[in-house]
Length: 207
Image (cartoon, rainbow, N blue to C red; front, side, top):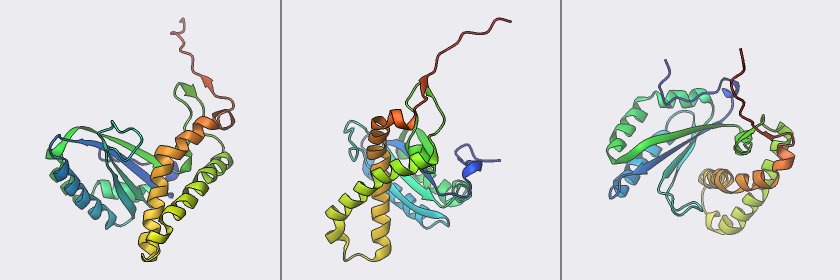
């Protein structure tokens, strides 16, 4: 039996997946939470199948009023994520962090680039074709990577190759997920979802 927090998608079992977990730390215990989360992420990164993990602090996004911490974790496939979610390392880490948390966890699994481009709220529509997703993804990633190289190229030049790639790709994922992709979706909505129509609530059918 899968754990309640496990997230898998049968149609994406062979593709990399992202797990986004949002939590709020208890007031006055932010330092303890951040220290324990650093240990938790370190354990996750050492786990087989984990491609990387990052903690996004409140205020790192445009909404400065947000008090949530966001843990973004990438795994090579859904099976690797499921193994991590059932592991003793994860259970021990969560148990140590729990006393410093307030409210329930909000977990969201993301598989593939198409989940960057969701139909607007209140609209019934399937995902756009893969070629449109690929084109819009490139339109977002190209300037994002270019600007990151301009801003960080000299700073990261002395770094070894692997840490440099890890940091740049993690920044690209974060910027795309919370910044660029939502803006592109809003701008290109008529092209991405040409047949999208607001859903109309229908009353119960007569027998």
